[in-house]
Amino acid sequence: MTDTPTQLFIGGAWVDAADGATMPVDDPATGEILCHVADAGPKDARLAEEAAVAAQEAWARTAPRARSEILRRAYELILERTDELAHLMTSEMGKPLAEARGEVAYAAEFFRWFSEEAVRIDGGHGVLPDGRNRMLLSRRPVGPCLLITPWNFPLAMGTRKIGPAIAAGCTMVLKPAPQTPLSSLALAEILKEAGLPDGVLNVVTTSRAGEVCEPLLRGGRIRKLSFTGSTNVGRLLLAQCADAVVRTSMELGGNAPFIVFDDADLDVAVDGAMLAKMRNMGEACTAANRFFVHRSVVEEFGRRLAERMGALVVGPGTRDGVDVGPLIDSAGRAKVAELVGDAVERGARVLVGGRTPEGPGCFYPPTVLTDVDPGSRLMDTEIFGPVAAILTFDDEDEVVRRANDTPWGLVGYVFTEGLDRALRVSERLEVGMVGLNTGLVSNPAAPFGGVKQSGLGREGGRVGIDEFLEYQYLAVPVR
Image (cartoon, rainbow, N blue to C red):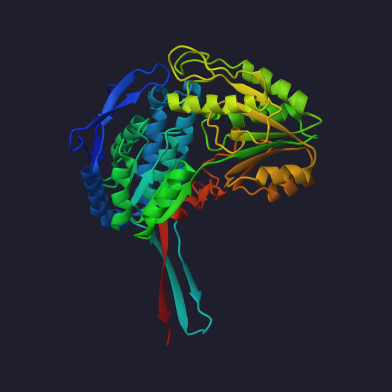
C-alpha cells in the first residue's frame, strides 16, 4: 500500500486537501485501517474544476490519434500491473483475488475499446430538402465532466467513464467512492505515466460528497455528469443538474428477475445463477435479485443451487481457495441480514446459509431461500449480497407481469430452450439488457444501461462515446 498515492490529483500534481483533512480506508475482511487518504472539501473541488476547465480547450484540439495512443498505453500498463492492482482492489473492497484479476482485465478493455473509438468520431453532410442549402454536421466534446464512481467495481467503473471521456476530448473531475479511493488514485497515476496532459483528469477523494459535488453541478462550468450508484442518490443529483442544465448519464439501481422455465437446461440455469448472483459477492447492480422458477422444476433447481452455494469457501479475498470475500462494510452486511430475517419471518425456508457469522470482518454466507413470500422486503429492495430468493410461477404471462412489477429495469435473465419463447419473453421484459441462457451480460463492446428508474443513457459499446459528444450543425447556402 505504500506505493499507492494517497493525495488528491489536481492539475497533474499530487496535493493534500486544502484543510489538511484525511479519511481512513478500511479492509472489510478485518475491519482494520489500511491507510488514510486526503479528504477533499469544497475548495479542493473548485481547484479540480478550474484545472479541468483550463485544460479543456487544448485537450479538445488534441489529435484523435494522440488521445487514442494515450488510452492504448494506459491499457498496456494496467495489464502489466494486474497483480498489483488486484491486490489493491481486494484490500480495499474485499473481492477474492481471482475475481479482482478478472476486473483488472475487464477494466483495461474499456481503455482498449475507446482507444479504437477515438479515431472513429464522425460527422455528416447532406443536401437540405429545399436543394439550395447544405448541412455539415460535426461532433465535439461536451466539455468538462464530473464522474462519480461506486465502490463495488472500483477500477472498471473508473475506466468505463474515463475511457470515452478521453476519447471524446473531455476533461474530467473524478470522485470515487470513499470506501475504495485507492484504485482510482492508482488509475490516475497510470494515466499520468501514459502521457495524459495535466488537468485532463483530476481525482478528488472525499467523505463530503454533497459539499464537493453540488457546487460543481450548480456552477455552470461542469457540462456533463456521469454517475453510477443508487437510484435515490441519482434523483438528488438530477435535481442538482437542473439549474445549469447539465447533461447526465445515470447507471442506477437494479432489481433483476432471473426466470427459469420448465424447458430450461437446469445445468445451464444453475451455472447462470451462480454467475448472476455471486459475481462480486452479489454486490452488483446486475445481480439476480428475484428468482422466478417454474413450479415443475423449482425443487430440483433449488436443491442444485443450494448445493453449489453451500460449497463456496468464504474468507478474506487474499487467502488461497476463497470464493466469497466480505461485504463492503458492516452496514451492508446488516442490511442483508435484515432482509433475510424479514423473508424468514414471512415463511421462507432457508436451504443454505442465512446466519451472520461471528468474528471480525463483514462476512455473510451464500444463502438460498425458497417459498419466499412476494411481499418480502427483499423482493423490492436491491439485496447487494449473496442471497438468492426463489419464488414459483406457473405460466409465461404471469412471470412477465411479476418480473416487470418494479420501478427498476436494468437487466433480466431468461432460461429456456425454446427459441420462440426466448425472443418473446425477452422482448416483453422492461429492461435495458437481457441475459439469454447466460448469467453474464457486461462487456465493454456492448451498451450497458437500463430503463425506468435504472438510469439514463448507455456506457460501453459504440454508443458509449456518444454520451460525451455534442452535434454542431453548419448551414451552408449554395448559390
